[in-house]
Length: 73
Image 1 (cartoon, rainbow, N blue to C red):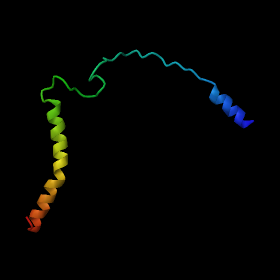
Image 2 (cartoon, rainbow, N blue to C red; image 1 turned 90 degrees about the vertical axis):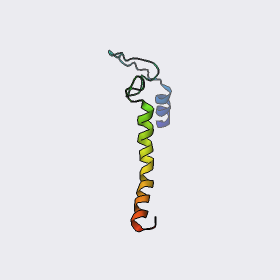
Image 3 (cartoon, rainbow, N blue to C red; image 1 turned 180 degrees about the vertical axis):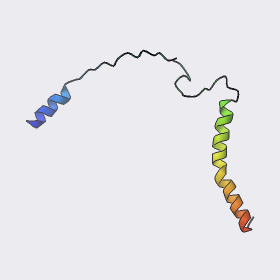
């Protein structure tokens, strides 16, 4: 009996409509990201690669500092 109720509930399709949004945002390429890519004073690639390059270099710089402190370098 319970299985029959579950089968009936899953077989039934529930349609719902969402309300239409009053605000209309620009559509297209690069419009769905929260930062500006084109027409920047500093190009996005410079910021991107400098941020990730610095983050990648920190462990190597820290190892070099520690080796220099210990006198092995």
